[in-house]
Length: 172
Length: 172
DNA sequence: CAACAATTGTTGTCGTCAACAACAATATTT
DNA sequence: AAATATTGTTGTTGACGACAACAATTGTTG
Image (cartoon, rainbow over all chains, first blue to last red; front, side, top):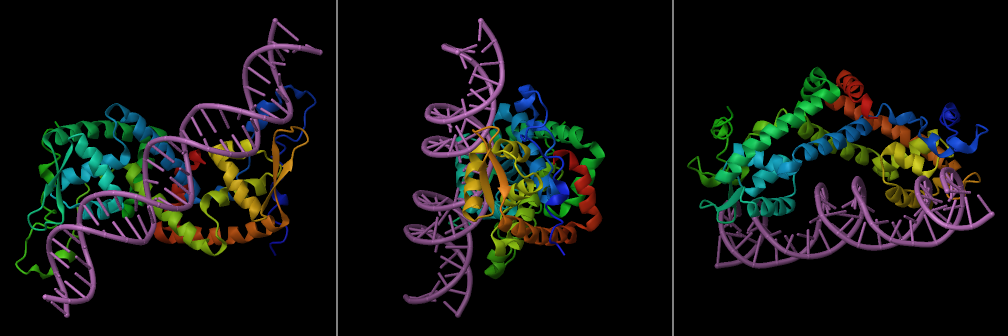
């Protein structure tokens, strides 16, 4: 029953470089004609991927002056809200590999934003804290992140953004 | 006005490995206590990233038997809907680097799902087509992708999924 | 028409990132 | 005390995006 429904249904909007007009002049400007996406429209994953790329790019652009990327921001935020956490706890909470968190913290520690304090209750683990500079910086980062969030609201609409946050609340 | 709201507000739920009970027995099972996310809740990017990871993992899992990943699926879908497209056109439409598309097509061509046909109107470019096997396979992939989409609907709710698709329609 | 510029596919490099595996130091369990 | 598990660390692998360079071909312009 699925023998010939798939392919012939959408042959119309193609003809991207199959010749069609007579004048060969507008040739290489017309391949931005609509290219059918067929099944991709209606796939949540595709839309979400594109949206996520846009969001990250805007975040990076908006926080470019302070050179903070989304993952770094999430790490700083979690440590700021829960000082003393171990690396394992932070990694688990944010869904990062603990191996990856090592490098993230190396960088943040080099920039004097975070300190690894030897935990006295478990000499294997480090208690993570923001430095004074880290706390002050994080406040500034949050202002810029809020500006980024306004960009999102402008892009998709404020109430759409609210709705989206409610829909995805289970994933935070 | 954001001088001291950030850090002291959420010190309560921490104590991950700060000792708290007397019995040292449940120690390393209790660090999955709530860890405050503070500012991260309310950031669209964070929720979208987590959601996107979940979606991709489910897609990969659901299509594991046929060994097709999201990007491969999108390439096959676009070629299937628009046979004869050039690599540039596909790359532009999907937002992939044309350098990256080369490897994707190499793999799909090795699996006899896609053919690069020399275009006669422009001897630089290739006209992309699904093979007969590619068309048959794509029909099967679409069935599995629909099953994945049902997983998404189960996860966030069918009408929430519809709403989300409408909100993000501008990004497809 | 001839020189120049642009496009297409390809190859390669670089940096980011997730997923593992292995390891030493330390904690927990038996 | 011996066996087992956890934490932080290092290293490897593969997927991925961003670039740069290149040959072949096409388009443009004087």
